[in-house]
Length: 269
Image (cartoon, rainbow, N blue to C red; front, side, top):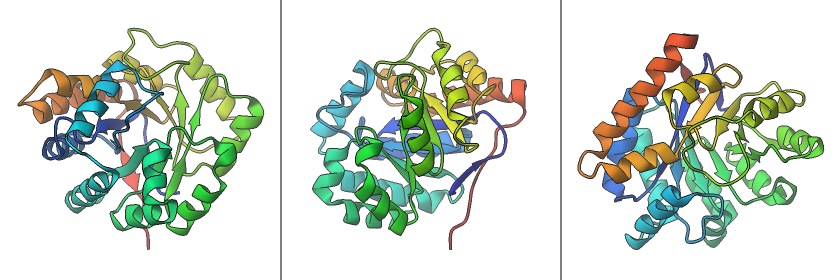
């Protein structure tokens, strides 16, 4: 397992690569790592992001206008890995860009770039046999989404083929900031625990320090995406500093409630 979480909550920070441009994305990611983010999800822009709300949709459109490609994101991953050996790196993508590159080539290039794992949002676990094969050949963690509407049978299958961590969707619907956490997240994590003792990360809608700390009471990590993308959108010219400040706020509250947040990336041979 390429990821292990020592204390909770750990922060998994999502960024849309290429928004507003790749150079800024790189600055934002490095700032987030310095501020204490444990894992970075590098979002690949896609023209039809069905699982995402308006904030990430707008970011994806801006990134595509600048010509950001999957290859650009993989190159960015390699640059980030040069600067940080300890952070976890995940490629977060829809299936189409990966199919265009080719599953085998994608997994090979991702591994060479220092990527730890991949999450393909619209690839059902039931149809993932080829992807799982190629990812395992290249020692990439395979991360799947589990939803409150998932049956126990499906959760069991997800638990069997997931490595790294399971991404538990906190509620039905699309990504986006929310004022309140629903009870769905905790009950879903409890159901997942029946099938695995591996790490669980909760995402979709986490946007405040209080929500981040709450997730730490029942899951190993919290994924924060739309809130970070929104901060980047609202702070042109000082994106990295603004994101670093926000990450610091999240981790300060989480640490005060449950101890210092730590994450370790296991060295691979």
